Length: 556
Image (cartoon, one colour):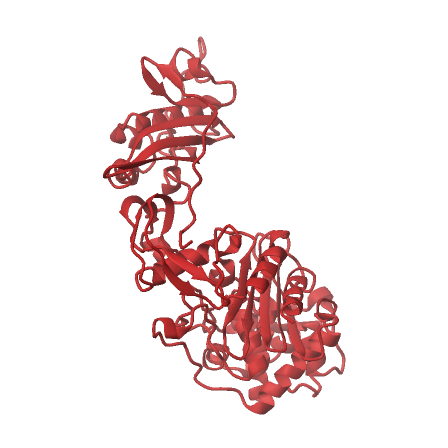
C-alpha cells in the first residue's frame, strides 16, 4: 500500500466544441449557449435601445451573462496557455499567474481541456482533462473544479475570485502542484497484528497514511516513485497538513511501518462514524497510550487528531481535578449549584436553568452543572487551569510525537468571564477526541501516557511527559465522579451494561453560527479509554455517547 490518496481519473461525457480547429471551452448556464459566449448575445442583458447612460460603476448582483462571460474568458485563456490573459480576468493576477505558470512548468500538465457545466448562481463548475509527463512517462489526469465570479468594487467589473482551489480542489492558497520524484517514498502501513492498512478498507485512514508516509517514508527503507502531488505551502504546513499524492506515474518501493491500530476496533470505529454526519472518535489503551482506533465521517480531514474544537463539559474532568487539589471541591461534600452565577460581567446558567439544592459535588458533576464550576472562578488564578492541563494531563504544550501530525489541545491563560468559561470547556479552550481520550486515560491509569500510533522504538523519538501526577486521593475522587456519571448521571443511558469498571463524562459545546451544539463524550472501561465528538450533534449523551460506548463494548 503506502500510497497517499489519489484523485480518480474520470472520463467526462461532455465533448468540447470545436471552433476553428481548436478545442473550445464549453460554458453553460441560465440559457446562455455557445452563441452568447462567442457571438452577438454576450452583452444582451447589459444594453437596450434608447437606454439611459449607465452609471460609472456597476453594482448589484451579477447577471448570468456576466458570470458566463467572465468564466468563459478565464477558462479559454487558461486552456490556450495564455497565462497573463487568464490571470487578468481574476481579482489576484499575481497569484494566478504564478500558479497557472506552475501548472505546466512544475506540474508538467499539458494538452489541457476545460469543459464548463451549468452556472449555479455566481459559481461555475468545470471539468479538467490533461496529460502529465515526466521523462518518457505520461499519464492522463482528470478531475472536477469550480470557480466563482465576483464584482470588483472599484469599477464593477466581473472577475474570477482567485483561490488556488480553482486550479485544483485539493489546493489551499499558497500550495502548488508538482510532478517529479516523490518527496517521500511510499510506506506499507500495518496494523498491530501485521495486516495491511489501506484507505480503501479503512476510509478514515487516508490522512493518517499521508502522515505516516511523510514521517517514515525515508526512514522505512522505501524508494521514491514519480508522482503528481500537492506540495503544501507555509499556511498549510502551519496547520500540519501533509503533502498529497494526486497521480502516480511510476511506483516506488514501499517501506514498512507497523502501527498500534487494532484491526477489529478500527473496523468498528469506521462503521460507527459512517452513518453519522461530522463524527470523530479515538480509542486508546489507558495504561500505555497506544492508539487502537481513529475514525472520522469526513475522510479528508482528521478531526480526531487535528481538530480544534471547544470540548464543552468534558473539560470538567480537568477542572474537577484542579478544584479537588485546591480543596475547593470534594466528591461527597455539599457544593453549590444555583440556576445562575455571574462572573466577570457574564451571567452563566445551567442547561434548562436547573439547580441542585443541597447537593454534593458528585451530583453536580454527574448532572453537568455549569454554575458549580463557574462559582469557583474567583478563587483561582488566571493561569490555574492552564497549568493543570499542562502539568498533569500533558496538554497544550504542542510536544506530542505520536507518529503523525496532531493538535495537542489549547488551554490559554484567560481572565474575567473568559477564565470562567474555560472551566466548563468554552472560552479559549480547544480540544479534539485524541486529547479527550487521553484525559479519560489519565484518570483511569492515574498518570499521563502520551498517545502514540507508532512505537517510539521505531525512530527513537521521545514521548511527551507530564510534569507531575495527581495524588492518589485526587485520582480516586475523579474515578468516583466519572463512575457515578456513567452509572447514574448524564452518561448512564449510553454506558448501560458496561459497568462496573467504567467512567464517563458528557459535554455539549456551543458554537457561534450553529443551531445545535457539538456533542462530546469521553469515557473509559477497563484499560480502554475513548472520546468522540459529533459536530452539531446536540447533547453528547445522545450523539457521541453511543459511538464511544459501542467501541468500549467492542474492545471487550
